[in-house]
Image (cartoon, rainbow, N blue to C red; front, side, top):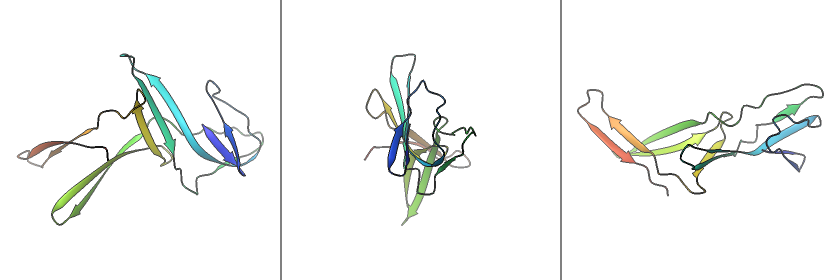
Amino acid sequence: MVVSKSGEQITIQPPQMSVQLPAGQYRIKTWTMERTDEEGNTWKLTGQYFGENETLNIIEGLEITLSIGEPVIPSLSIKESDLRYSFDFYLRGQRSEIVEMTKNGGRPDAPDLQITNADGSYQETLTFAYG
């Protein structure tokens, strides 16, 4: 995780689950988590773009817990224009940051979107494309 204070950047690396920072206001720049699944694939999550109002106030002698990392929140936005629909899928973190996911250093397969109407008479599966 990288945090900044008044132009300085501080990088916190695991296994440091707890670090002591001087009192002051900080901004989280990025965080990264990496795991290996049972098939040997390396999955990496990177969170960034927290927004201008996202600050951490560190007070001398008080401990805080950061809500970053998993779980991440999948989001789907749907837009209608001239009887056409467009879909956008993205991942957000617990602090509304944008999260990127990679598998073995590249993009994983694009997710599928299953569409079904209320009575089940219409069903379609669409695959998102990266672009």
